[in-house]
Image (cartoon, rainbow, N blue to C red; front, side):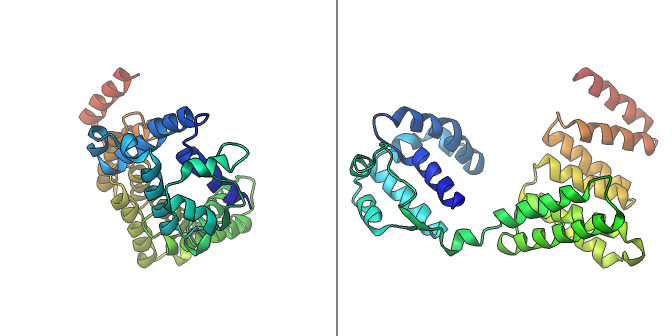
Length: 271
């Protein structure tokens, strides 16, 4: 069960407190966990000594039991009892590798994790990648796009606000409509549009969602609105070269010559 092994490896990275592992765990918290917490929850984590508050036996127990409860992991009762008693030293003494967990401790992933969208999203992306193969027949391309769409929609059933799934689903649906133009109608385009909007609402500063929506708007002929979103994409990431090139091409096409000259000067200056 590879997923169980991955969970155990991650938990051992986060919760090991033995002498041999303490430095490694400290670095993982400092370099990986705390930056992510700061990203999602703001400057609070810059001023509060989170590592000192959580990285002790009581903090580990609180955090571990909370994660297990949220994700529905089914750990062995004997292991849970030691954690409830804050006996992390005892956990590591019982282990031949000085780590608190091994693969026999996690009996089952539980229903919560089984219904997350990770696998369906990955399958959708794989089918999308196959559909982009230029050597593929039109029928095969359509087939893989349809399979990709179904997987992304399955993923959205369990996590309807995932920005990656939303924008990939929108992208695939638009490709399907473009390949089947006789059946294209406003309601289907509206659905694609709503998926891109939801992706942006999920993370308004995501340069890729902003850019892909702008690209979709160009295809729909809404150039002024596309210009707005591609510019927002560049503001979110001034190093997004595809967005920069697309924006310059777009404003030249719209004959906004003064803006195009100014933007080209900025583009050349940043090289």
